[in-house]
Image (cartoon, rainbow, N blue to C red; front, side, top):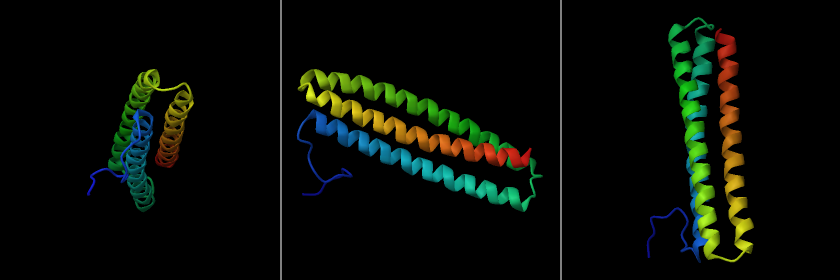
Length: 131
């Protein structure tokens, strides 16, 4: 059998499905953060080439800042929804599942928030050199 899922197994139950979903969501965020990091590296190299005097670079960095703010908003929305879904799934399963689900959401939120904060700091560092 072939699967379109990134993980090649069928979840045992709702708890397992939710944990797989959160894992997949985290990986998608990491991929997006990697792309943003690549763009920021390009901007940093452009900044060095232009010796910090490029108005176009400043516009690009402003757009990057807007994009990171949007990413943060989307992430917070997803975290809120994940917590709501975790509560629903918990109502169908034993109490021990509660910790598993909460830990999955907290781990997802912490790790992706940390990546976005790192990208935001990189962007601020570049802007500091340009200004």
